[in-house]
Image (cartoon, rainbow, N blue to C red; front, side, top):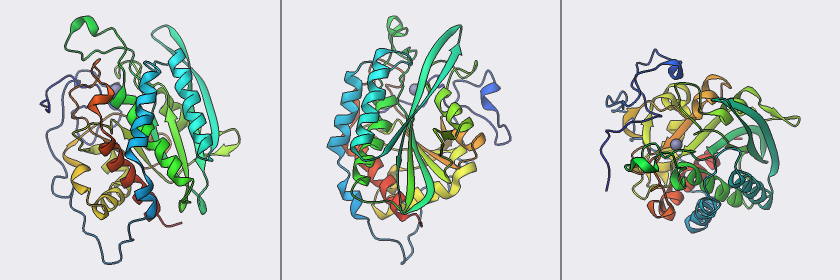
Length: 338
Ligand SMILES: [Zn+2]
């Protein structure tokens, strides 16, 4: 069952293309973009006769194994910044990256928000490709401390389980890391797991802490992590999956969007990606695009009735969806020229 597009939405703002600094605006919250700026060109990508073949890494992506990684994160409890569960999931991500043979880096930072201080950390894995050139894959691992969209008012001060909004992107990226252990990618892959995406509100700068910190500090422990392009995964677990076409992704990272659509088309998955209408979504890709100048596309399915509620649990997600997203990103990675 799908819910209509009429709810208060933190990440989705109605705006005009000329407005850049959306998070400084107040009052447009709760609006969703119904205009489809690029309706005509999203969704159809023709493949030339020279399209690369489906890469064997694609079939190595295991949706069930990825789903297990999602469940495991939810079992830690809500991964609210600074919590014990947050520490546990950080260790879990680092361990899985190590098992995949990645170089693991931790990027700690301190945030003060609404008078409270939080110790946060981004977790980073680097997987060597055939080239030193870098591509970024990222997702947030933290979960929202308040279920402020819950239909039951007495639940609205409780933390969400974050199966889709938090665990899903991480689950796909960790499974991709496992696959890349056996299939070296053309470009070096930088996997970044952001903290503090979903702590507070956009209006008073309470979101995207991890991606903003990373975008301003691309060198971690002597390692320069500046990538040429990137993909952000957020809310990619919904059983009823279709990612939205997204305005920032098109404006800054059209090549990535087109490349992902081509990969999806090769796999017969094009109906799942960048579907109209075009939404303007504030998410971790905005700092990457605007501060770090890393063209980054956002794969996100915002049509999720359990968003920021206590019902955001694993049963709303599916291994098949994780596989559709993971396989498409893998095919895109392998299509890149070293
Ligand atoms: Zn969220």
